[in-house]
Every structure is written in structure tokens, then in C-alpha cells.
Image 1 (cartoon, helix red, strand yellow):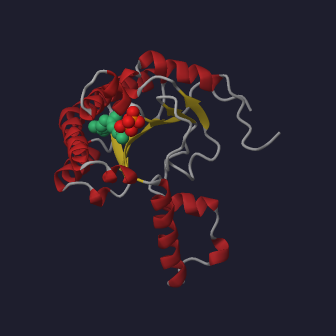
Image 2: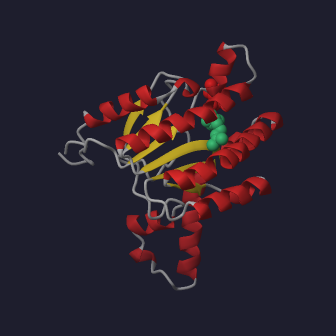
Amino acid sequence: MAAPAIPRHVAIIMDGNGRWARQRALPRLAGHEQGSKTIQACVEAAIEAGVEFLTLYAFSSENWKRPAAEVQGLMRLLERFLDERARQMVKEGIRLQAIGRLDLLPEACQHKLEQAIRDTSSNTRLTVILALSYSGRDEIVDAVRSLARDAKAGRVAPENIDAEMISSRLYTAGIPDPDLLIRTSGELRISNFLLWQLSYTEIHVAPTLWPDFGKKEFAAALTDYASRQRRFGEV
Ligand code: FPP
């Protein structure tokens, strides 16, 4: 089946902030700061193209193990992003959502995130999903635990558990699986991102480091996607 010209759901592994900073002899945080500005360009490009869902891998569960100063800096950037962008998102018709173990985020981030999600909940132009404190394996573990609890209580018969039921227990319940995954900075890895949901997703790896990724690179990824034949395992 030829891929529809425009993917409904684009997911992005925003990689290369550290290398971008190192190339300029700047601290890693300068790369993350520039990277958080890049998000705006991609949101605009997604809206212009008619993409419905944009999922951004902003902070993985593994990222908690980075040096404390870098983690604190990333959390400050998240807070600033929410302060500066949330009001604009309301005006621009963008809905914000988040996936991951959000209870592990600093309280100030959690509050701002909840507020922004509430304030934008009725918007329909583009849904931006931030993956924060996110791990694909943890997500599956949480889904399995919830199903096991229901099975133990007799609410679910084990033989009735199917792929659809598992999808409905993931953080992404109700969101279509990504059609296109973009990874920047040339690395060929999934890095524990949306492990279940990426089963049939088309992958585009861009050599560009995330802070340099802009509308032109986003458009090139969409052009690459439009050339793909999607077969979902069929002939
Ligand atoms: C990977 O670069 C990127 C991250 C670990 C975090 C992504 C964060 C941002 C784009 C900015 C903050 C986000 C928000 C929503 C405010 P890396 O550090 O692994 O780069 P490297 O592989 O070159 O070292």
C-alpha cells in the first residue's frame, strides 16, 4: 500500500544536542537550549503539512542517570518551555499531552504540565505529545501490571487479552501509532522509544544534529515518507 502523502502521526528522537555543543566548545546545556528552540520550527512545519500528532522524545528514563547539573538544566528548560509556549499553544489551537512516568518530574514541572494539558485539552489543530521520564519498556511493564491486576480481580479473562487491549493500556491509549519516526544525528537506534507502537512505523534517519534540524529537514523527512510503500507485513 502506498503511504498516504502526509503521515498522521510523526514521532521524533531529538538527538545530537551534546555533539552540537561540543562542536562549538559550548557546555552540553547550550545544545539542549538550542534544541528546545528547534521544537517550535518543527511544530510549525507539522501544522503547515497537516500532521495531526507530533510526539517528541524530550527526556528518557535513562536520562535521569546523567550528571545532576545536566538533569537540572533540562528540567529548567522544560519549565521555561511550558511557561513560554503554553499560552501560545492555547491561541494556536495546539493540544499538549505527555507520556511517561510523569510523577518522577519535579513538582513545579508536573504542575505546569498539568495546567498546560488542561488549558489546551479542547484544541484540535495539532496534538504535541512530550515523552518525559519515558521508557518504552516501563510503559509495557505498567500496561502488563494493570492487566494483571484486572485479571486477578476477575475483570479480564486472560484468553481475551489481545493486541488492542494492550494498546489501550499504554500511555498512548487513544493515539494512533506513529506513521513516521524521525531520528536526528545519524544514529540507527530506537533507544527504548515507543517500542510497541513503532511496529510498522517508517523510519527516517537524518544526519543533521537536532539543534540544526529545521523546517527544510522536516519537509525532507515527509518527502522520504511519501515515497515509501507501506505493507504492514503483507505482500
Ligand atoms: C539528546 O541529545 C537529547 C536529549 C537527551 C534531550 C532532548 C531535549 C531537548 C530537545 C530540549 C529540551 C526539551 C524540552 C521539551 C524543553 P544528547 O544530549 O544525547 O546529544 P549527544 O548524543 O550528541 O550527546
